[in-house]
Amino acid sequence: MKPIIKVKRVYDEPEKEDGHRVLIDRLWPRGIRKEAITDWEKELAPSTELRIWFDHKSELWPEFKKKYNAELKKNITVASFIKKHKNSKIITLLYASKDEEHSHVAVLRDYLLHMF
Image (cartoon, rainbow, N blue to C red; front, side, top):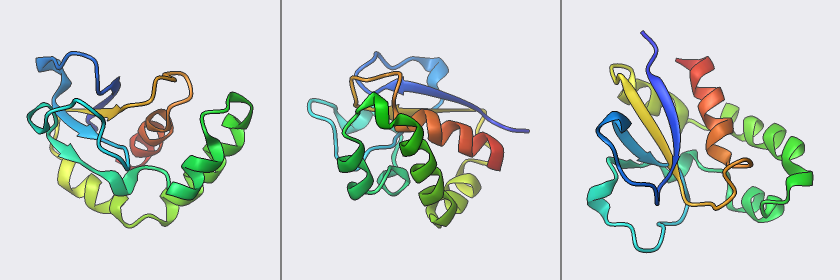
């Protein structure tokens, strides 16, 4: 059975319905205590080069999605993440960005749902 994969800002209030709360950012967000997060999978986040190139510019979003998906296809951490969470009922992917519409975790969620 596939897990439910949610997407949420790390600054939003934790809820019981979040299940495993997994931070998917290369950098630890300011003001967040480690107890608020189950796991930190920084290797699943976009590469530093891709993150800097994108810079949350909405006009680059379609190209960013293509490039990030290409990175995910080559990322060996994806397989270990799936194995680790194969029995999870709910996974909440957390991110720090203020731009909720153009967040890398939305791309990752779609990719993981296809892979589970």
